[in-house]
Image (cartoon, rainbow, N blue to C red; front, side, top):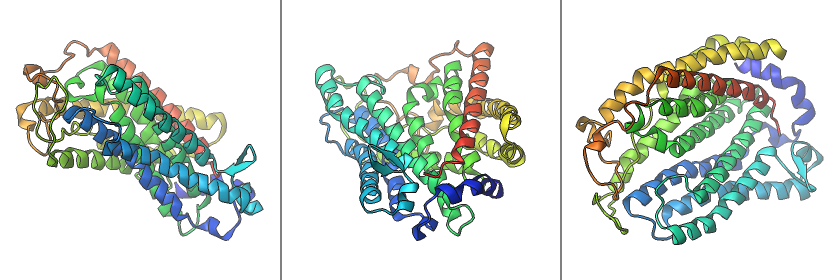
Length: 404
């Protein structure tokens, strides 16, 4: 795919990309923005654990600070870059940026700064919400929705910024490192979206149609972005591996720290931080997506116009069917194991994921929606997966041309 990406980018790189000497090397600040972006999924998973282990006692919890740093640090980096480009940059530097109100900054920088503004705005809103209504009973409360939207926008901005460098550096010695960093950022995006979907992907919900429909809505699109856009092989598998590794880190590390509930009612007296559920087995469909892209994706991406879009649609149908089929084949039986007593250990954390305000009972080892899985619901999931894959492939075509 490297040669194809180079062919797509070569005609426009010389006209639009910066021509200064440092345009052949990705700056260190790009790595810093991705490192800070990792604080978003890790922080939100930590925050959820804090809520269900201790309860919310103040806004200034370590998890909240990590989340805000995940948005503020990239925004400050890009703000400094905008200042440098506008007032101290060369004409070539400004040619590689987008002007807004006379200020020059890359597209990803603008997107990130707007997302960080939403995140900072959500903080006092969340504080007021808890003081007024008390403990959240769901992950997606109104202030959390504002925060989640801001986090998503920040992540998209960081992703676009790394993408612009990957596309500029095609054919240079630093092309592989830029492509790998883009794939890592895509994996962080997968992780973040998976955390926000936890209410629908809980192991006890994994025998329902809505579970597969939620998967179909989120993950084919997110996994196809690195598979199509990253100039390395196995992009989807690497992104899914990043998600798996980060979530396993939270599953295994959080319970090492003691915790005690501070808010009533306390039905399940936990003694340590409650981990998130075991990660979804996304590595399997991600590997299948990479195989499809390896054998068919090259041909599709080299064909432009309506023929290329139609070939993408055929590829999306294959991705959608394979994704749902493989997830059904592996996640259905695995979820039976996760809600059984056999998974109650440090590795799988099967029965250790329950909040302090949950009253223990047999319902913890049962599927909550036994009659909600139908062929019609499964068909809807396949259709949604095909649409999600189609959008991912078409967005990928545009993303291969982002250079600013």
